[in-house]
Image 1 (cartoon, rainbow, N blue to C red):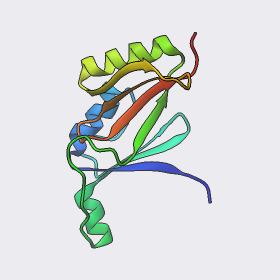
Image 2 (cartoon, rainbow, N blue to C red):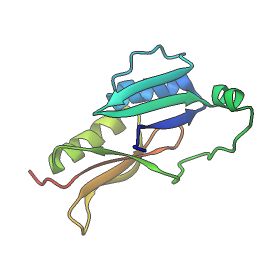
Image 3 (tube, helix red, strand yellow):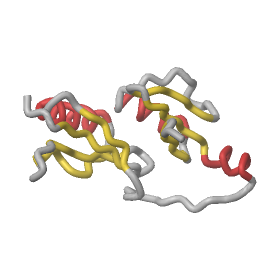
Amino acid sequence: MKLDGLGLFVRDMPGMVRFYRDVMGFEIREEENAENVYLVKDGTLFMLYRRTDFEKMTRRSYAYATGIQGHFEIALQAENFAAVDATYARVVERGATPVLPPETEPWGQRTCYVADPEGNLIEIGSFQKK
């Protein structure tokens, strides 16, 4: 088997489509009210599934975390340290929830965290100083 992609089960499809398209810069071609959104981001399949549609398809209910939750992260690689800082500032200005401002970690990575409107963590980082 090989990893094919990542899917998020979302409560508010229009809000999440706007966030990943307008704030994070993902190229999303589906309408905001689509049942499911499929896109490829840098060679990785990224999917948004409406929770109610997925539950109907699988014929069961699920429990979902609320608030900013730490079950997993979406990791995005920036070109260099300056790009980490600039990207963080841009996405927070556009509406991402700040979690951890950019800082350089002891292992040499410049990293920061924001959250999407449903509390999923997004890391923006780089190991390249210049």
